[in-house]
Structures are given as structure tokens and as C-alpha cells.
Length: 251
Image 1: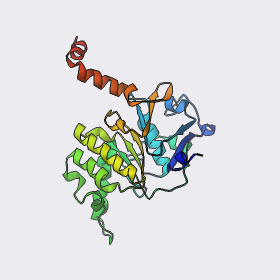
Image 2: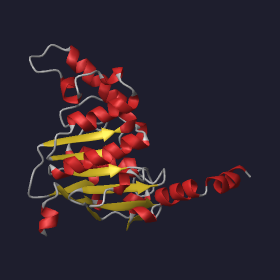
Image 3: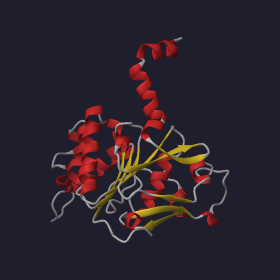
């Protein structure tokens, strides 16, 4: 094990194939699962990218649950369930840990963040001697902010450093300007000994230089660069040749 690997809170993701019932049923029929043996993670930022339907969120969810996070997001202390829809893939995931343990952690899932915000409100209305949970998110109800503001409140206030942060499509409610602010926030937290695993479609968020990008395809996954991703290529082509691409789309 290199020093580089040891610095990661999670060094590798491994798939235990011995108990998988069938590769003909979901989620084991996904290319990312069929071809997964061991996936090495970057100690700073690991990106999981690819087209819709490739299994990014399914893999992220399985890794998060295997770590102990709630399937719908939050810290290990959240145990609410709006609807149990997560797959059993986490039962076959083994996380190889580094020599250090994180002090903080959070699973940010864009599609169920509303449920998380609601649960925080419910818990804070219950009698407790502890400070309100919402104080860790900036002190203002997440339902009394715009979608983008409530997303960014978690990144800005709840993430404190020396943490393992798993983010599933965090750009969903963020403008391009806020995505750049998010990239800056990621850098701040990396400098505070944090590790990120991020599933995203955003070329802006994919731009963190000290990272690794895994592109998911129907055949599995491959290491790539930002400039080689379809997200970057298509966005660049559209911005540089907008009128031509619009003609092709509308013809």
C-alpha cells in the first residue's frame, strides 16, 4: 500500500461476487456491476460519470449504504425512510479503508434532499436538550430557501472538513456560477483532509485537477480525462457552434 492510498478514507471498492444471485436481474445486470471487481479511489476526489441509465446513482447508493449512510442521504445518524427503494447491491460491496478515519461524513443525494430537509424539521420540532440540527445547515429552514440555496447550505455549513463526502448529482439545483463556487468549496475541504466521491453530469464540477474520473458505459467503466468525457465535448461543441448544432437538432 502506497502512502498515496493510505491517505484515503476509502481506498477501494470491491464487489463480492460469491453471493450475487443472477446477472440477469437488476441491479446486477448493469454494466458497471457485471464488470466490477475492484475500483481504486482517489484520496481527494473520485468522479463517477456517464450517460443516464449506466448505474451511477445505483453504485453511489450502494457505496454510501455500505459505509453506513442512510440511503436517502444525510449522516450516519439519519435513519428516516420515505420509501425503501434502494437496491440490495450494498450487500455485495466491500469498502477497503485507509489507515485514517474521518471525523465527518455526509451522503448528499439530490433526488431525496427534500426528504432530508423535511426530516430535519421533524426532528427539530421534537423536544431535545441538544441544539437544533438546522444550526449545522446555517440556521435557516431548508424549506424556506430556494432549491439551490438549500443545496448550497449543506455544502457551506454542514461539511466541516476531515470528512468523507459522497455526492450524487449535487449540481441538480446549482447555477453554473454556484457550481464554480461548489468547486472552490471542494478545494477548501480537500485541503482540510477530506475525500469526495462524486457522481455528476457537470463539466464544471468534474474539473478538479487532483482527481480521477471513471466513465461508466454499457461495458463497464474506464478511466478518462475531463476533455475526453461526452459532457465536456458536447458542451464545448454546443457553445462554439451553437447555430450549427441547433440546425442539426431541429432539422
